[in-house]
Amino acid sequence: MGYESVTFPEESVFLVTGGAGFIGSNLCEVLLARGHRVRCLDNLSTGHLKHVKLFSGHENYEFMEGDIRSFDTCMAACEGVDYVLHQAAWGSVPRSMDMPLEYSEINVQGTLHLLEAARRQGVRKFVYASSSSVYGDEPRLPKIEGTEGDVLSPYALTKRMDEEWAKLYTRLYGLDTYGMRYFNVFGKRQDPNGVYAAVIPKFVHQLLHGEAPTIHGDGTQSRDFTFIENVIEANLKACAASHEAAGEVYNIACGERKTLLELYEVLSKALGVSIAPRFDGKRPGDVPHSHADIRKAKLMLGYDPDYDFHHGIQEAIDWYRAQEGQNTDCKK
Image (cartoon, rainbow, N blue to C red; front, side):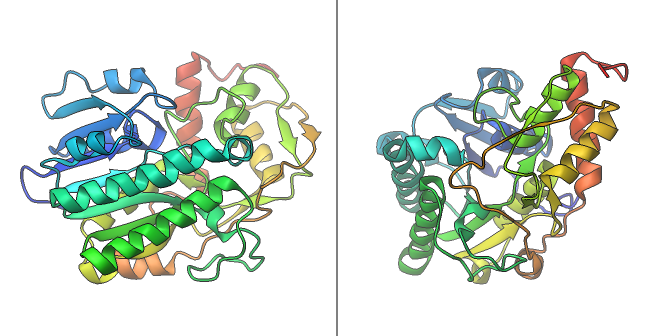
């Protein structure tokens, strides 16, 4: 793995906020396997207790049920912590269109609480989840840090505000912050259920059950789909990065893009199914194309993703198939 060479002092303590979620639980798993102490903070609003139970017997794992909207909770969570991996947030562009107040409270105020708590508690590094959605209506491809357009959703705005707060904390207070602009992350433990489920787990789940997935728009919109292992690498390398790399944001992706129609074809072929998709109207707030330039992350963080799209898709499909109890004889 690209993060195997990354080392930290013995007895290092990591706080993973949103540690019961998709990305957070994968980070917890890797950190525990490497011998580190891990504190998971999650209010279980979108995370899952089953992800906590995966590690609840581990001597180096501590689960703290709490909400980042409480500053006292954030202070307690950051006590004695060396590294913060802040993944707690509400995702989903469509849901943010309906719930802008909640998104501001959780994604912005919650992040500010954690930044201040990390500063007061002497945290060494603060790595946080941002999003490719911050590029908004900027049409140029690939997306390059510093060439953002107008945001298209409340979710995107919350992530851009998080970036500005983090940069300010580095400049004013010397807290080393590193923003991870994730591009359509996928992999094991990503929930396929619910109205706001991400496209890959949702498509896989539906195809495994012989259902026709819905593609919003005409399917020509493209995404830089990024396997979870690449995201783990980026987070760990950010924790080991220099102070000179702090106060910046970084595209975390594969540096390639696939249209939804291409994705659908790859998934159908890998699953051995042939089901025509349904098409529906374009969703408001959606960015038409995302394709990352990852040169800055390579240069400043040493980010060098091991998994391309096809390698990651196959591993993800294998995991979902195992979870579904399916075999290669899925419905045609």
